[in-house]
Image 1 (tube, rainbow, N blue to C red):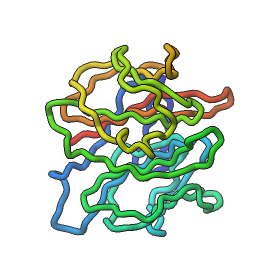
Image 2 (tube, helix red, strand yellow):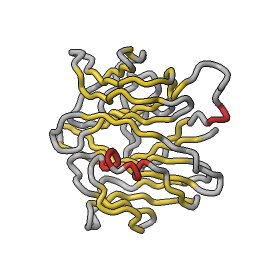
Image 3 (cartoon, rainbow, N blue to C red):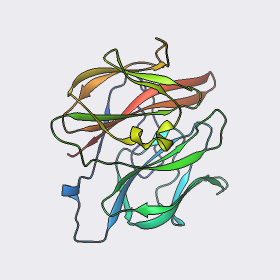
Length: 244
């Protein structure tokens, strides 16, 4: 099942519903960055707060051009900003009110970061966090994955790969405080079936993802929550970051 995502952000945005396969985006590797010019950091954004709102992004008070990021959307490649220490604000387009904020922190030269807007509880306020994407241990001998539970109404899930439980009792946005979950873990390359189940049960949340994990590639798997007229629904999605 494939759902179309809004495209009102500076980068083309894709939503991958369960069963739709893998979507790839380009990671700007260190070998592909021109180090002779100004220092830049590389950033992606994910607005996955189902109880939030669309958001414009401000870096150190300066709005990044490209328009608002709708709820449920995420960028599929990195964009660059001048390196330095600054805060990041997410503001609602309709009222320019502050939706969420990341306090001032360093954005290093040639650093890669994922900025997430999220809810960590049902009907909770929107929050934002900066995650450092560390590719230093990535080699061509394995594929690499990490998993985020970004569904506030799915309080605990287990992650299965090829029917084997690989992570247990993952709670909403637990990767924000436990930064171990932000690391990419090595896995042999191959064709996989990936499932998220309600913790301690065999109840699959949504539909299964099927696809190949390739050597030298890194993947962020995440459980997201959608709100509609018929109630809440959940989707397991994946972003692939490539050196190509």
